[in-house]
Image (cartoon, rainbow, N blue to C red; front, top):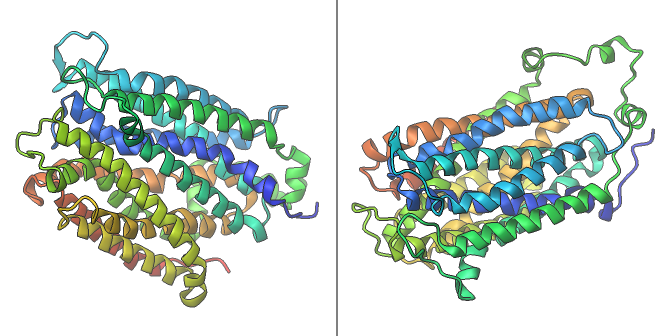
Length: 450
């Protein structure tokens, strides 16, 4: 089968549902710390609430990859997982922001009240479903796009990812602007501006996912085998069925070396998502970090501003994505990767010194450079080094290089905040900057497949 080129419309349809999925992911990343702080979480334990999302991703995405590699039916190969994940995500997005409204007994278990436990399990199901819905988009590009167009396909996916992020990040301040309350009537309840953000985000998610589901026709088994040059009569292709341990043993060096860079990068961004709200509230909005009352107006206003600066980060990522190809031409993939991470490190470290909420725009624009590189380069390098037969399984396993660093960072966050940063949440952004510098240094260990 000729490795035909897809039209721009076909490449766009492959990834359009990612726009809706990313709105859900943006709402989660920008508001989870705000939600749990509002429910009563202590800043030193705040990072623990971030363990479940990457943990569920590490479990779910390899399984989605493994079983969707074998799923061939009239609905498609990857699309059934996309649809199921989107439906579950919508249900949970309607429940999570109401965690503070339900009537629970006031008893606490392991230091968490009942509302926090409800929120924690809702978060677990939300991230599980987002991961189920997200992974098929990456896999369908690997399945259906030839090597010549793969960079373009992932660039479209990256653009839709950033566009979805912008929309999701701005929802809370937009709904506040049109008159929806940003302060809840009772302490411990989530503001209506956040609730409506999740409700509208859920609606967009299901509509975008249905669009991709209905407009994309996946390859059948015979077409897939021809497209990827898999001959079931050949011994090496018959032996494609392997366990994950064997696959890891046979993984190309790019899988591991890019994974090392990923470790530092994703740990850094975990600290951005966890501590930006507290850092910005204390530095720019006059919030009392010692008293740590998350129901105060200053904290909630800072929560809206976190969405704005995260949006600026997404814009910075889009702008840097335009520069990235030229930078790759001048310095090569690894040079562009390292420079991007160093620019992002500068942005992280600068947050600690900024006391004006508008000056933060520059800091998060710089952080966007690192994000652009993290979205564009790792999957291009790794998918070019992987044979097609286990593409989905390998991409699922590669997702562990995203999840494991977040889990490690979440486990260490409270200790670093206490003993390294002297209880100052803005100090955790300096830690994030140092991690990106280490990531930039690790880039030069990568051995690319030509």
